[in-house]
Every structure is written in C-alpha cells, then in structure tokens.
Length: 336
Image (cartoon, rainbow, N blue to C red; front, side):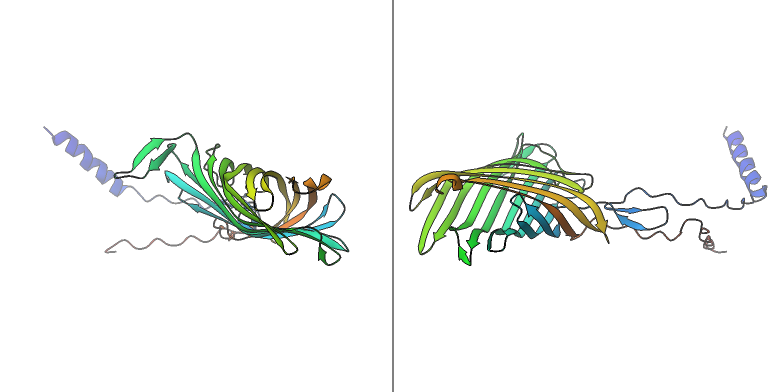
C-alpha cells in the first residue's frame, strides 16, 4: 500500500537529476555601503572610517582646565576604573568603580587650594529577581526591594595656602566606609540612586595641634548619578552629613554637597573633549563666621583618555564606489 508514494518520490528525484543546471545571473553593481549601526562604542561610516561614538566617563584618565567663580584658574586630574562582574545573561551583577588620585586645585598668584583623595571604591550588587542571599547552611534567598552595596575611601586631603604658608588647618579624611542601598535598581553600570550610612575617621592638623574626629556609624550619604547618550553626557549629585566626636571640641555636625555635569562636545583622535561644570558646598561650624560655609563653582574643558571600550569593529575593506571582492570558489565535494 506504499507503492504510490514511493513511486512519486522516485520520479521527483529523477526530475531533479535530469534538470539542466541553473545559470547564475551576473552580480549587480555594488551600491555604496551605508553607515553601519554602532557596534559597542564605535561606528563605521559610509567611507569605511572607524569613528568612536561612545565614551564611558567612569573608565578613563582625565585632565581638565577651567575657571572658578572667583576668576581663579582651576586644574584637575584623576583616574577612574570601572569593573562589571557578570555578563549580559547573568542573574546577579556587581558594578564596581575605583577612583584613584582624584584631584582639583584652584590657584592664583599668591596661593591656592587643593582637594585630593588617594582612593575610593564603590560596589553595587544588582539582581534580576530582586533578592538577597543570607548566609547559612543552606543559604537562604529572600525578596528585597533594593540593590545593596558598599563604599570605601581613604587618603582624602584638603589644604589652602597663602604666601607659602598654610592659611588654615590641614584636613585629612583618613578613612570612610558605608553600607548603601541602590533605590534605582538599574543594571546600567553608570547609573544609581544610593542611600547609605557608616563610620568615618578624620584628622584636622593646625600647627603642632591635631584634632581627631570619629563618626561611629553616624555618616549618612545620598547620591544620584546617571549617564546617557553612550556616556557622552552624565550628571552626578551627592550630599553627605556626619555627626562626629572630636578630641578638642566634642560632638559636632558637618555637611557637604557636590554637583557635577559633563557633556562631550567633540573628539580629537577619538579622545573626548567635554564641557564640565562642577560645584561644591561645605559647612563646618568649627570655622569662625562666614568661613563656616564654603562654596565653589568651576566651568571648564575636560579631556578624557578612555582605558578600554567595547571591541572596535574592523575597518571596512570596501570604500564607497569600489568594486566588491571577488567570490571565492567553493571547496570540491568529497570524492570529486
């Protein structure tokens, strides 16, 4: 009862074998290649040139030159390293940032001010399912509405001088640490909204006198950061308050805030040149009178040297109007 289907299959196979080979039509003239879609941080334009279009402002060496609100020239430099532990399909990702020797200075003919920090580290843990794991045997996973993380910094220094001598105390931020919650819960490594608290130890030196300040889990912080347009623009806001015990003055509170905005205007040999706006405010009642409040604002240009990026695509082999490459012959069939 299967003879008819078998006969039909045999006739079809004979027809395919007996049919004359199809003659391929000559290739049409190649159209000029259009600009490719960006691959990572790079774009191939219509003429085959590779152009950088993405810049990560948190993974670079940078230097800047600007003007402060009091008309003093300002300079800055620093190193920022980003590390993301987890691939695109990971259920949990650690977003880590290191800042090394972040320094800003405002100078004039007779003195100036310098603020620097030797090292700062931040790690935020993102989870796809919104959970945290509690240690145990076995570990327990529980729902949690926020991402969690930590911050650690050391070696902060702030000083001012006039006429070759210090014009105020030498302020040293020996160490700060914080447990933080990321209220935003975004996987994007350059964006967060964090709230945290933790301990700190500071030192204020003036002449031969040293004042030690200890904050026992009484430092609080609130920070917002967002970058968009492939990192060509980013905004950062941060506010901190601490209530510390000082060896020479007892308990006192201090506060400070910082604003930073940057937009890349152009790139020179794939190095971004950006317009940068930085503002800072600080309040410390230990300073007499109006000096208790400090406000600074700086506008300038910032040059960044990216440390790495998404892999760059190869340069286009064909330029606009050039003939396409000749087709390669297919390998012979086995036994031919």
